[in-house]
Image (cartoon, rainbow, N blue to C red; front, side, top):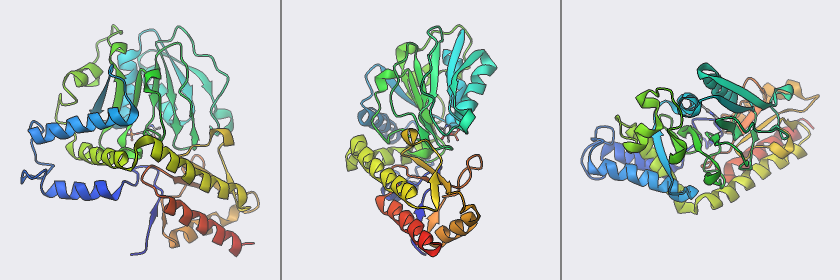
Length: 357
Ligand SMILES: *Cc1c(COP(=O)(O)O)cnc(C)c1O
């Protein structure tokens, strides 16, 4: 098999160490003689994994003591509903930065009043709106920090007069975050934190309990905080792989080190996009995501798109097709993507440019 370089937008490439450990655990979980997927979630071995997983989250992101980490099924898409269920009383405010932000907004609108504070649809979500005012009478303000489809990223932790809630599905653990600025940070695991099948929510406990609605038990963050994310049977396999992924991250130096590596990978690829006459980036430079790099064929070279796709594939590049709403190409440089993968993609772009000079 030729060497492959995986740039999938999600599920993501995961560290080999985590995969190897998962294979072992599937055969024999912690020397119990029982497979990970058959072990009792009430066993002390499993409880220790659950504990370790939460502890690693807290350590890696310096999560303050008044927060809890909950691990849930249903993906980020179910969190779109959990957020208004737990926080929407009179009015919610959303920043509309693309498809995912819009889906989050729709769930809030299904439960009450939800307003769009600013929107970047006028230029196909290629930038993050800058001058907007967060309504002081909103119950919360919701942002999508990394717009996986468009390759834009809100890199600052905003100062918000109302509880700030963020979908960080695709940039969590890729850079330092000041958790204390948020009431909730949530996401699906499969972009950076583990395999599909589990979502995380980092919840400030005292932000809860302020709505008068009935919150269905499974959608109430308090249920999962009280029961240590074991109110019902947890998705043990994805949580195990997540734990191993977090262990790997800690082992290489944690978030500061991965951020340094991620910046270098993104700089390498954006520099090539800006230099290479055949390609052009689609996101506004100031808002470029360090996780999802979107680019298209430059004007005059559009007809080469399929040829480049085939050429890149022949060189081992996997998952660089852009999302249909942007077109062209998207290389996702999640944490486990290595500098050598990016270097290989850049070499491929350079070789292709020479062929068409
Ligand atoms: C992928 C993605 C989602 C959806 O995640 P699921 O776990 O599949 O529901 C939501 N938000 C963002 C920013 C994403 O990238």
